[in-house]
Amino acid sequence: MVSQHPNSHVILGGDFSVYLLRNWSNTRLLNDYCRQNGVFPVFRHEHSTIDYTHHFNMKYFNNIDHFIVSEQLYQASILKQFVLHNVDNISDHDPLCIHVALDVAHIGFCQRGTRPSPSWVKATDMHIAAYKETLRTWLKDTVLPYSAILCKDVCCTDIEHIDSINVYASQISAACLSSANDTIPFPRCCGTRGCIPGWTEFVDPPRNNSLFWHRMWVDCGRPRNGIVAKVMRKTRAQYHDAIRKARREEDNNSQ
Ligand SMILES: [Zn+2]
Image (cartoon, rainbow, N blue to C red):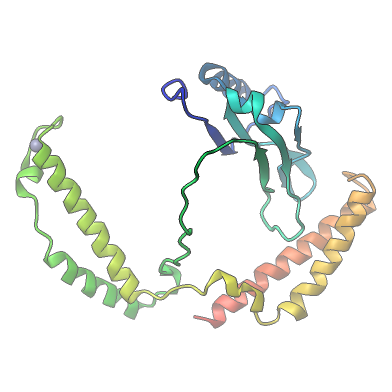
């Protein structure tokens, strides 16, 4: 894969469920994959400072999320790799970051679309009925590509067949999307999370408590056991429960 694109930099990133310091069978698989493809886990880089990327109730800690990069990036461009540990993060994974030094002559970019998509969870029977009706109207105008559909050649290379199937598929998905846009309710904008009712009252106090004990735990050298670790885990769980509860109640109220 990488050898097919010798002029490109490659960055793979994600949860590989592989702990590179252990001799698990999947560790061997990932190592083999990296060797065969000429890519390198940034975990082994001298500028990588990773304590953990994943935890189980703040009790067991693992490095299973990775950035894996092509050789030139690994040798010459990795400035640092680190993990953001933030008490506000309710996931059991913490974000892994890399800083890469790259001279680029031009970067084209466009504003990332933040258009929300319809929320099917919020759709009532009435919304669904309206969706079906609208979709039916849209699909009525779609022309079936008969000759392509009836074609029996499984290895067909007829350009006309391929084109008409592609057009047909995109017409169907466009019909589904615009019917949903017109009939299914949208979720609340993510930016309005901050004004969830009851946040200051019910979420801020456990958050402050959790932050306090988290700092205390870090100051004590991040012990696995003992009273400080126990209180840190408990206050963190209380804080995250409070977030989930406030969000649940807000979702119920907005339905
Ligand atoms: Zn055909």
